[in-house]
Image 1 (cartoon, rainbow, N blue to C red):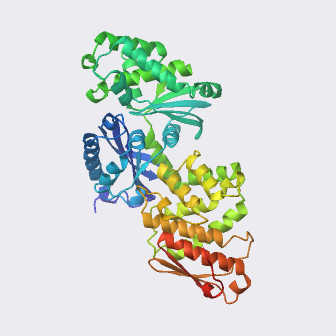
Image 2: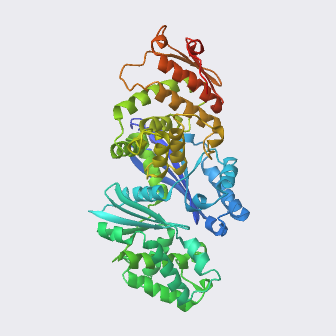
Length: 520
């Protein structure tokens, strides 16, 4: 062995997790591969390609076959970079275009044949939060900061302090959609810019006062569009140092664009062909943002959504899951009976542990989602105890829930919606990421966990023997216990009838059918 071969023999090896995040954006697809070591995220590899998915959306919000094919072709490139990655080490998030496309499922189903990882369509607010996380982990600011990200189909705005986002919003205006709307023929006229700026200002009317009141000490822009605009505004700086972009510098850039007359004549050395065809829409939006929010200056940060996804993965590996903080916040806001919620949680997860193998519920975050549903199933009590399952589901479907994707939030609301009362199979929704049979089984587990704690008493429930096969759960109570609990045994008998709508069978021992006769 040479001295070179032995030099690392005494070096301590740390635990390293290799992770990847893919951002399926409206303009570009971005893949970032990193390793997490000693709580630090170290970028190893990046893949970026313009796909302009948003160009394929028609007026009916249907994504064209050509756009879908462009996206799938890019995913084939990504698949090569992700060979060998474990399922839990890859996260794929999709943003505005797949949020909006009525046929998004066609794309997602086709993507399943290319990538063995789920695609999560995240809400605009969740996108904003993740963008802020990426910036906050890579930029220091004393005091509150405003982060702006202009994407292909939407623009995100976040005010935060430190690692905490305080105000998150997403507006439906992006460089691809605005270029398509106001500069479709490639002509760069002053009237077109002013129309685009006015349209963006109208969108911003929904948030401008609130953002100005909260305030910030530093404004940071992310995304490729802002990077290009930032670079173009620096082109005449004699000292070569980047200085903040101002409204004046953006207006001067707009004059240059108008003087050029057409996107084909935007001959800037730092402006790529892919960015050139959508930059006009981005410029109009940024000018409107400066005017509406009265921004003095903006600096650029390369960190964005995919970095935020990576840092959340790091948080989940080494720190508390942000979803736990969300659940805690909701429990406080809606005065949840935490003692009761904890009893339901413990019972439900105990049932889950007995059936997860037989019911094939391992993976896909099923245990976590069932746990959050158990903890939050009574948030609707603050509205009315009558129909609580509907009130709780409405809250969970519509409230901001940092850390949860759109589909996860939809699943959570669905589990809670059907945690009690009769089930009509036709009312159960379908999901992109979650198997229908698995959803039914999660509903059954939550229902039984709630029912068994209906007395709301610590220590009321005896030790149970729970067994399961493919479509049956058998629950055995201690001898004589159900004889003394006629109401509980009647509830269990009725519940066994309800389970038929879930294509499941609930069997209770001792045989409750001999204790009661129930009529619907």
